[in-house]
Amino acid sequence: MARGVLWMGALKVSVRGISLVSIVILARLLIPADFGLIAMATSVIAFLELATAFSFDIPLIQNQNADRRHYDTAWTLNLLFHAGLTVLLVAVAGPAASFYQEERLVPVIYALAAGFFATGFSNIGVVQFQKELDFRMDYWVMLSKKLIGFIITIPLALLLRSYWALVIGMVAGNVLGVAATYILHPYRPRFSLSCAGEMLGFSKWLILNNAVQFLRTRSPDFIIGRVSGTSALGLFSISYEISALPITEIVAPINRVVFPGYSKLSSDISLLRQSYCDTLAVIAICALPVGFGISAVAVPLIDLVFGQKWVGAAPLVAILGIFGGLHALHSNSGSIYNALGKPYLITLTGACNIIVLVAASVVLILQYGVIGIAAAYLGTSILLTPFNFFILCREIKLGLTGLLSVLWRPVVSSLFMYVCVTYTDMLFSPITTNLFVRLVILFATGVLTYLIALWSLWLVSGRRKTTAEYRLTLLLWRKARSMLAVRTAKHRSQTS
Image: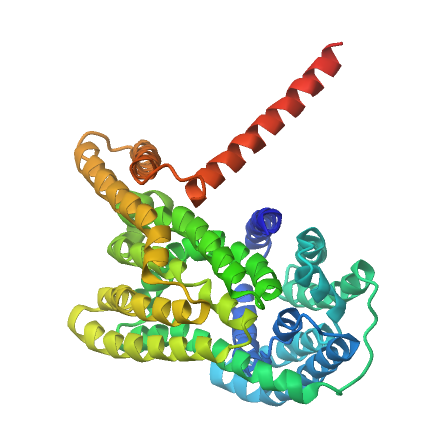
């Protein structure tokens, strides 16, 4: 699982790098209207895709006794649902074009619908890579799809200088990405519906969970857009994106890895509980200081990266940064519920979150504007985090003492770091006007104070060698020594 986290972290870096290069090149070759047209089409597809988001790979990973019948059924159902959605996309292309008042949208949706239909043929066998914790191959499956799209789209943009370069690149990327799944895994699926009832019984909760997730992340957007307008929505969107960094960059790769690991341990609650505590400790140690740190440096960060026209995002980031750190703590619970075969618990906790969040958002935005939405997110997270942990601890028989023993050191250390960084910023902001220097000073202060606090609390709590802090430090130390030994040996061989 630890090696898998490294592979998924490498995937995240690789995909981010490809996306950045692609955006920079395409932005110089195409005009903003081209991107806007594609965004319209993909928004229609994303909304309708909720109807087919059954995530059949999850029951395959969760079921340790899944055989060929289950894999073939999952492939067949996936293909059938993709075919149904393709027909639906063709049907709504005209109304969507009328809604957006953009006739060019019709052929674009037709083309993207064809590419979407092609993805339904993807080789279900690649799920085996994730299930067997072979994340090296999982890395290549996911990276190949991104690389194929990049390699096709850039030359087409140079040749066509039109939005059709994006469309053709996306469709070709989908088709060739499907071919890559058959090249990378020898499994050859067959048409079968023998286990349809069993798989749909599990997956019906997954589609509800996807809908709940969609509402949780998108419902405040509708409220802001309706009450405060596009400018406020733009500020909030960027602020939320920044605050989500602890989840998207740290927790997401971990969650992709630990779910198949949890599934293998689901028959032994004691081992599953220990694995969860280890994972939660790593998430708390890494994600909490990032969230609190983003909050503490919100003003210079926004000024330096986005400029003065985005200055209104700084107070939003200051609030949402703390939300991002807290939300990361229980973002791993869904993997536990799916591993235990209880996806309905994700729906339960998510529905409670939506009810509180929407109610708070409606009340607070009328009183405080868009900053009230940010406060609603943070307040909902603070209010419901104990509830989420209560449900989880009940399922894996984890006591309050065990949970606090994992969390208290990272929480206290992050709060100490936040206070130190905030005080340092108050001291240095009048002294230097260079935002980059100011951020470097604050970053160094945050890293130093957090590590000192975490190490000090580990010392006073008994220097236990079973804690995640000790084990992570030992792992990094051994890795550094190993890399140094390899470099030394290579240097000596070159010298001789």
